[in-house]
Image (cartoon, rainbow, N blue to C red; front, side, top):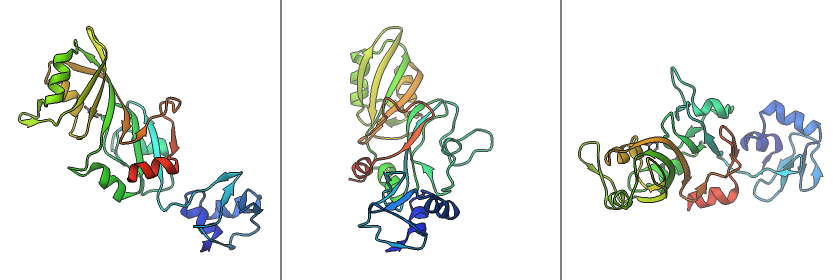
Length: 234
Ligand code: URA
């Protein structure tokens, strides 16, 4: 059991003063009954709390998917560049990006304050599949597909784990999808460089079961659904 205003703050729906206002304005319902005061007690595991008719799920943590634009660094702070956190612009200061995308890479970025989940997705040996779309200068062929499947040498002496390469188009500029489950610095770019090819555009499409939606425009973000959160945890 907890106070309604505390629930609204804990679910990052509102600050304490905003919570009061929302309740005053009749925007919050508890099990189909309009909430009349901030200090009523609710059962966060049983009661259905809504704001403007939308259910507020109780979770200690926040989970956000961002379609990262180029030009932003995936860090919480940077002295010279704008960060993905500047886009989210949340009052929740515990949020951080899970893993890194290069400044010029676009696409799926998970942002959360759930450290245990981040650890499970990133810890060496626990790395999950990440799929990227890439445009590459060079003619990607079955030779490249085999090289990626067998592992290539990057960083002087590191042999990459098997990666799956799907050719969408090949020519002077090729279009591909690559799936890796490691996360070394500049990994995809270095893997292509090992084959004398240059990545000229890179976008992350998915991470484990989490897929970037087609209609989440670049620079936009949304909360994960309960189903997406459960899939990431399992
Ligand atoms: N590999 C790269 O080279 N860059 C990224 O941003 C992600 C994977």
